[in-house]
Image (cartoon, rainbow, N blue to C red):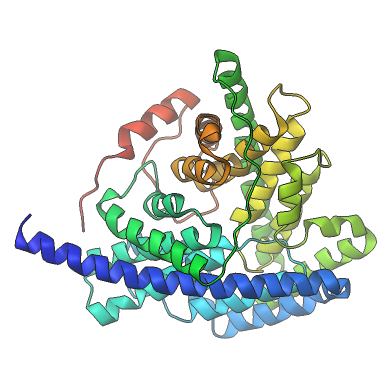
Length: 421
């Protein structure tokens, strides 16, 4: 190894470790606060009817001081592809406040968006401290996103891959694999040391792979991909409609909160779709859920995010997938826990164009026995998903053709290293 290479790796080991410590600490604090507001909401159900006021506060905050960061994760992906200026540090506290208010009053949203945005925006501040160039900034952004994802879900390997994969559909940016790996693992273990306890899911029993079970897994994956596209379509159409009718963000968040709170009031059973829904995800892997739970989560999350609330899409997508897999267990001859676990990751894979991340995530959360089935479902979901996606700033490096050619194009381009700017 040359002296220049040695210096490079020493430098990035230090920087990536520092970013990981920060990401892990910030994620831990966020998860503790999120748990606290979730418990408070469950104890005081009347808080659900204050969602319009919470939305008004969020809208006013982003309308006045948060305009430059309101696009969230898409802003960081944009900066990765076209580096212009360091992501404003105010993204971190604003998305934290917005997410906590969303969950306190019963909005249906996630948590990964918050962790990824906090991790990426804080990591980008090291651009000033270490005088990073354009290429180094891109690595910092990927590392920060990896650290945020890994620490909030407890999946360090999937977190590493997420930072490499989420930027582009059909391409891994492998030049930053070491930096993303260090950040993801450090962030994960820092969060654990600070007392974070991640959900432990049921590990489905091992089932030998046969032609029949492989076909069933692919069929389930196609259903999960269709659900992912339905979610993206409804969310994008509602967002366009709200923006057209109500151009001012505070008005959108207030009216969106009013609609959701009104539904909660007149149909109390729909409160099962409020917040993260982690208990229902766990339940869906053990016993039959309501067959329409997945669609209820689609509608409530779409309403929440389209009207301007904060939190992210991933945990709702995990909910949608797990409950859809639960429903499919009544028609497909695969076990309920296995189908729920496959759906848990495959809907996310189709909506975010991240099949590798999701396959590895399944292995980390549900055990290696699930790996081959998760892979089949995730890549089938990805293959039928087209170019609709939750992260519209992603660059597409493959043409949208048929199912087989999309898979072929993916593997053809996956490991091709792009030229550095």
